[in-house]
Length: 400
Image (cartoon, helix red, strand yellow):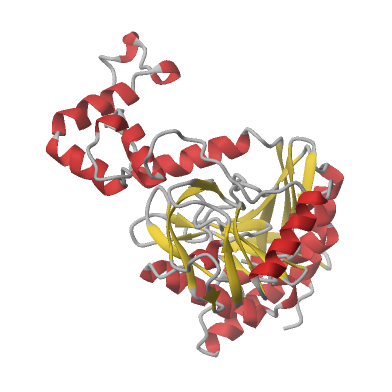
């Protein structure tokens, strides 16, 4: 989380732990209302549709709670404030409440009347289960639904058939004898599909592509490998994205309807896959201020955390835009979909050798195709072209 101080008071917000959830459940507090907290100390425990984890404190001071245990809390929503004293926090909130410019966000409300966590609701919905049938001591948790499914395997099968045969998802009768029912998607795949579908409803997505000469980039990669440092194409794409966003600031903004929001810091996420196939988007902070070597070191650190299952909530919080590379296969380019509360995604395939003319003679030239996916409701093709031109200049003129 990036601290946002006003009157020496910081608002603590819920980070986006992974790309699959727009909200989390607040399970419990680690710091009491009015208690002292140290920077990095766990503030509270949250549950997503896939896991539980702690939210670390972004600063030290006195903590005032602004959400209730058991609530569904949206990503980006305020759950508390940290300041030098409770009185300073109360004075700050009073000034906010009296200001016509900033409506209060200190009293979030639940969007679900069911007393269950986000993970429990997601699992019950996946299997077509009426969650009120699940017995639990207090709030229904994901573990309660899993136990219910284990004890009632016939419900799991029935639920799968119901969830696959309702509304627009119903299989036409004419196809029933021609296909094999392979069942439901795995949890993480279905969550990503739902997340991206919801995000795309808010965007007018367009795409632009540009080829980049990669002679200097390949030389940099070779130098890193000779020096024994872990490096791949992601740091190069982060560098290109940061340069593009500086040239076209709209890439670091997003639109909700007609209203536009801009990120205060140019933090950029990159896609990384865990060994069990789950997709995460860890965030590199202040990418434009880092050298390529620094970007490579941070990418290596975050990628290893994904591999080991050691990412914390702060590692995935925010992100003004996202980059993604598919380089393990000879993919020329790929067109991605933006994440929630972002307008832009910069993607690339594998670096390839293309024929080019040099002084009238054909030569092979390492080439990369960058694809910028952007919200056409926020910017137009000219903006996208200018952003890609800046990215191209950044990579073709690397100081190696």
